[in-house]
Length: 218
Image (cartoon, rainbow, N blue to C red; front, side):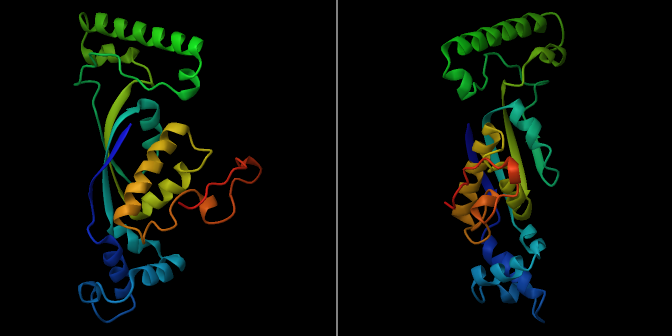
């Protein structure tokens, strides 16, 4: 898995703070930017539940080498934009797939898994010689890799991190979410100061379903 931050709103903390401050001022945001402390201003406004001000900040990621199992989960997040590698127009010449650690660490399971993957790709290539690739791709598994571009605003990212950085989230999407969060914290430390699973901010909302091993801030 390779996660890159392609583009983001420059000076997002200050822009969102100015946007929030403009709601309570006679002055427009451009006159309020860099006036005051963004951390204090955003902490107060967002702390009151006014999360719309951080929707002005956008972040775009390039994600490489994740499984289709991951992207099937990812597209459930509605307030986002996705551009995914097409299996219709991109021929998958070599077997490329994600191996879960549970399978990788068990020699017998890994042998079964890799043999099955090779069998699938053999069938895929044989079908490509007789039918269009868009039909041959139906044999490809959830584990095959894909590349995807993701754009979310800061408000949706905080929601995404709250769900997907949790220990109860599926391991692959949790790994991606953790990498995305690290990148966001570097460029926008105020907005993402308390980002992550709910347990980094307080009590676990899962109740009896809690993992029992809360994640700590940073």
